[in-house]
Image (tube, rainbow, N blue to C red; front, side, top):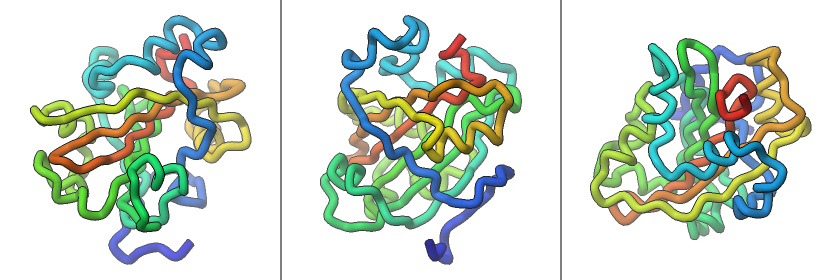
Length: 198
């Protein structure tokens, strides 16, 4: 895929194709609840700030940017955001606790969402998106969906390069946020070292 000149790749990973994406079969949490441990299910359906929760388990919380810029969106993402445009702003990061990646996060939005009140979302740098969303007084969040990512997925391939603690499959969640009247879709996949699987 040709890279937009404004797109940034700041990854230490050797995965060759970016963005990684979060394509899967997204379901209501109750459909998968019986297959998941109580701990994992709790992490997946928690409606609070994931950033705030993660910070409770480390001395140093950091955000590593994998890629951000203007990229084609999946049909599913366009439906969730009610978009007709094929290209949106995509940001993919790793959320790290004391240097260990716990979460892969993908945020997608219409290009005009970047100017939403609460911060220029393309200027986050190494701040987490959650720090902006959960500090906005008018933020609204949709129902959470969850999904499984098996060994055929790009997210799973990424996890194999980040840790030796491999899982049969990974699980993640997503929801839409409304900020300043504009929507963005945030997907978060728990990587093998995350406490969610313990």
